[in-house]
Every structure is written in C-alpha cells, then in structure tokens.
Image (cartoon, rainbow, N blue to C red; front, side, top):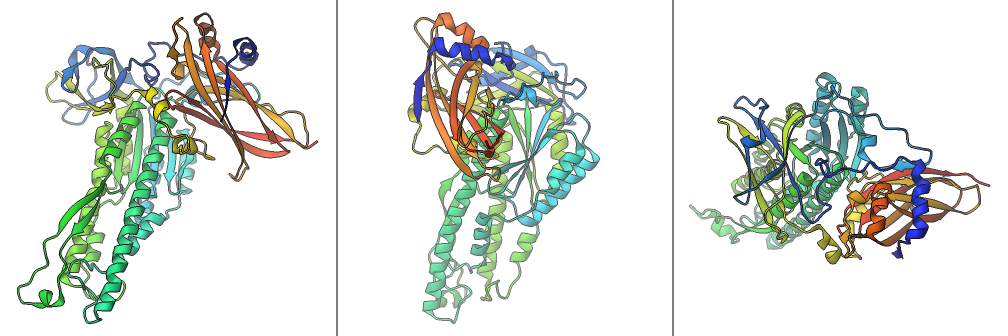
Length: 593
C-alpha cells in the first residue's frame, strides 16, 4: 500500500474546491443516535423495549423509572429518551448531489418509520423451507405492510446479496422476494450425503451384516471421511453466516435509531460434536440381551463465543435480531427416520441405526434453534420457532422499532480489557418486561491497528466485493468526474471524509493525528475485478487547523488508469486506528477518443 503524509497547505484548497458538494453535516455531541465508538470514553447505548403482560408497549416512563447495571453495578444514565418512530413524520428532504458527486451518508436514503431488514437465509435452510418462508413473506407484504414501514430485502447463499433497498413500495418488495430462488447450498448438500451412510459407529457393521469384514471396513472409512467433510462444511457456513451478518451490521451502523433484522433461517449448529463409543462385534449384537454401548459426546468446536461477539457487534450498530426458524412445524425429519427396512443406499437398517438417526435429527434441530435463540436474545430481539411465523416476526419488530426507550451511559470502569460486560435494565413498575441487549465487549477499538494481519484482511475483502452492501461506519463524499476522452486516461478519484466518524489520536498541542486508508477497486459491469489501487494517508492536524477540517472534512485525491468503457468503482475509506470502514459503489463511463 502506498502511503502519503497530509500536506496542509496544498490539500486545504482541494477541500474548499469540493465545497460545491454539500458540506458534511457534522453530528453534535448530543446526537446520541450515532455509534459512540469514535472516542476513548465510550458511550454505551441500550435500546429497551418495555411491554406489559399482554405484550403492549408501555409508554410514559421517565428516566427515574429505570436502573441500568453493568456487571451488577449501577451506572449513571447520561442519555435518556423515548423513541417513537412512526411514519407520520417524513425525514427532511436532502438537497440533490451535484453531478459526479456520491456519498454513503445515510440521510440520503433515510426513509421514515422504523427500519426492518429481511434476510432470507438459503445458506442454512433446507430448500422446501426456503420456499415456504418466501410465500410467508409475500403474504405479509401483500396483506399487512403499511405505508411508511420501510423494508429492505437481502438473501444469503454464496454471498450476501441486496435484492431491494429500503422502501414501503409493496410491488417493489414483492418483486424482490419473488426473485429469490430457493437453492440448496453446497455445504448442506455435503451434510445430506453424509446422512445417507449407515451409522457404522453404533455396532461396527450396521446395515452391512453378512457382507464381510472388508466391506465393513470400507464403509467405516467412508463414514469417517464424510464425517470430517461435514465438519468442514458446517464450519464454512458458520464463518460465511457470521461474515454476512457483520456486513449488515456495518451497513446499518450509520443509520440512527433501532434497526430490526428478520433472520429467516434454520440456523447452524452451535457446536460440533463427535460420538465416543466402543465398537462391538456381530456376536455381541446378536447375543441375547446385548445392547448397544451408551453414546458419549465430545465437543470438538463451539461457536458460542462467535455468537456472543456477533450479537455485541450488531447491538453496537443498534441492530436487534428477530430470528424465525424456517423449518416451521417439524415432523417430517423424524418421520423419515422411522422408516425401517433399507436406507437410501439399499443397506439394511437396524433398530440401533434408526434410533441413532432420530437422535441426530432431534439434536441438530435443537442446536440450530439454540443459535437462533442466542443471537435474538442477546441483541434484544425475539425468536419465533416451530411456526415459521414470518408475519408475526415482522409485525413485532415494527412495533418494537416504533416505541422504545434509548438509554446511554459512560461505564464507570475504564479498563478496556476486551472482556464481556453484562448489562441489566430494571424498571420500577410491576408487571412489565424489558428486552434489551445483554452486554458488550469492553474492547479498545484502537487496538485493531496493533493486531491486524495485513496479509489476511477478510473484512476489507468483503467490504470491497462487487455489489456488497454499502458500509456506513466511516462517512465520506466522493467525486469521480470522467476526464476528456482518450485511449488511456487517468481518472481522478476525490474523497472528503467526515472526521467525526474516525478516531484521531490527541496530540500535545490539542490537535488530532488521523491515519486513513483509501481503496479503489474497478470492476466490469459483470463484476470482474479489473484493477485496484490502495493508498494510505498519515494526517497529523495541528490544533489551529483542526476546526477547519472538522467543518470541511479531510480531503484526499488519487487516480486510476483506465481505457474507454463502462465500469463500476468500489470506493472505501478505512480508519487506520480502529479498522472501521465506509464504502460506496458508483458507475463510470469513459468515452473513446
């Protein structure tokens, strides 16, 4: 990566030259809806949904009605408000951006009302259940969606894909959902193949009796191999799912207020286990009164910590998860397992194999539901299981986002040791329930710069992927003006970064030392990466210049060499101290000479 040092005298005119674009609307310290993670003194925000015994939202509470505790210790509430986000008040109309100017500022596509994100998870959901969830969504959109209830639609298969950005236009949303085609992920196909094999580890030869020890050995080794492949497949879809939800978190970080994520999925196993059993012989099994040895389970990999950290990242962006078990009323799996005779490979089933398959199916179902429940409960949302109730999840999330209490506090403990801190919110009113985030990790964001691995940067790679959701953790404007036609031209790419959304180290004179990365990736319209340019900037800004930059923004200019044609440019700005990223994607057409 190429680095340069900010030269105040030369780049300030560029900043003023870009004043034709709307100046960054700087947030004030009182604007508590933006993520308070840009400074060392961290403001922890907590959305609290308060309901009575009938499930109705309780309004009219005051700050004195609430007590907030961190690791059991009361905290002083610094921020308190009742957030009522109905659709009756439209967001302010933003001025049109000048030609060739682009931005990732949320206010330029900020709809009215509580924001709801639908995520159809094809990576972790059987095909038949994907189809049913799709029909449920279409039914809700066609019959219950109200004007002023903005919804966006994403799908997760090979990657996270945006089908429709926020809108309350029913036809646009229905068209987006109809474009979702149920398909089985490669990872789940691998797991299905493994289920076809007889459960050889129960007796040592189940399903292949009478075919000789060599055959039993072959199937035993085949089962061992497939079992290892299944573990790899599960791990792959866990990592891809977590990465996708992190992308959504960064996409929504710049939007103020509570956001609700409807995650329609069968989930993934919360842990990978293996059976520890003692193999028996044919004689043991056939002997009168013999029973299969008791199964012991060993946990090989647990994803519980991944879920805790994911929930914390989502709630830092004020995203609450409403998870819907896409499997609905589950009975077919166990019914299929009860079929005796031969299995799908034509091999003999035994009572032991049947019982083991039923147990595996039940355990897998419960493990997936544990994942859905963990992420929902820790982010202040809800879980809907055994009903496939997309409609109820959507209605509840909209109601929660329309009426909740926002509390904020500065933790008394200033030791940023990365450990999890538990949050409790209590209300001094009888008969009420409170849902809220369960805690956060007390990490120092600036430690990212010391621990990052420059040779492996999955976060940046994901952010720079063609068509990936726009990230709003760092806010910036950009200008890409096509130069005069030519066979090969330098295309100028200008950035103007909102310094309020990045972390600057305080200098002795009261100024700030910023470290920024600028990334430009050039794609063909079909999504093929053609070229990229990565540049860094070291920007110590003295105190007497700081206010000018806080008002105008931090400018930067680079260029890319391109010939005539149509392109998609993916732009990113990364805070070099915290690793937070902002992105945007813009079209570019260069004429031939």
